[in-house]
Length: 119
Image (cartoon, rainbow, N blue to C red):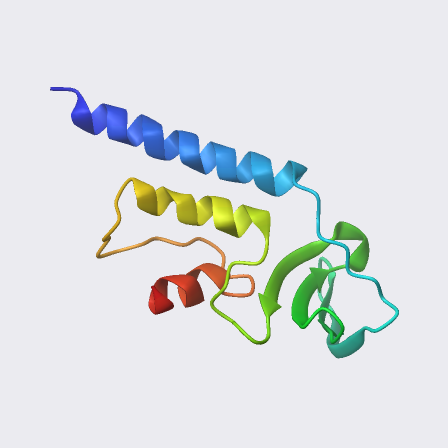
């Protein structure tokens, strides 16, 4: 039976979709009027900033603000998936609702690990 190759294709398709959504999805508006910069450092590649937006109840990770939000956390509910790309990645759980292992490449703001730990 071809269930294993089909499963690989489905998982690869979901990964490709998640990457596509990451690139094309609109980043939620994060006006800088109420921004509180918690961390600000120049790295070899980008300026890394952690910024709180009190009016929105969010903390965001930026790699240069012109590149948008890399990760976002709702302070009142840290395990909630705030950005579309992380919500799309979590949709993979529909294929395997009770995984024993998950491989994450790149941590960012740890949205997916917090979500998996809670649920």
